[in-house]
Image (tube, rainbow, N blue to C red):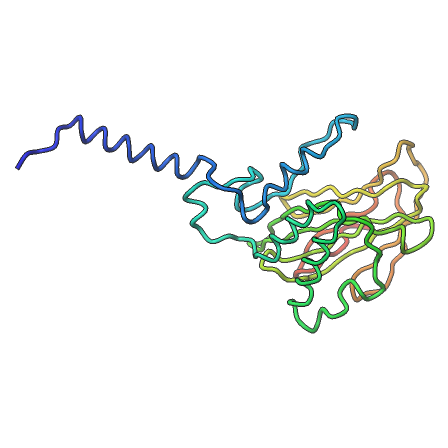
Length: 245
């Protein structure tokens, strides 16, 4: 029996190792979870606007690269198909696709969610984006929408919708204020799943600013804030809650 030469064995090991690295690292196909949403949002950024950090979706399956490797494409996705439909829908400029996907998730969440987004309903003008966060080994999707103009005349608002990565509706918080105070923007801190809602305005405000906060299946709360940070939200027990004063 002829023995394999050391050079041949070395070549085989190098070849197998190379194929393994290529299969685990090189982009192979479009991520089925986020459909390359982060890249899509980045391409839609206007060069005339002030520079901002690249859009973050935080896709748990491709880490916002937009593509997955050959080996990763064989693994089970961490994101349900219904949540992936929401992310694909965010590419639709008229917002109809994401609203249909969201309505389907609500219906599939069970009878307890019959009035979700219908109880004192916020008016959704358009969807701003989405971001994944993970807390205590639970993966969530935060969906953001402009909400204020159809609720109270002269108001502007930000709607934060909490969904599970498995495809369930969980909670929402709607924050609104007068349009004179500027638009509201979310800033997500993924390390502890906090959402800071800030006021975007060209003028500094030193006095108190009045805001209105509404939770799903809860009553409205009026609050006041100074500076540009309105309030901070956190996640506890699959619900959104206000952190701090």
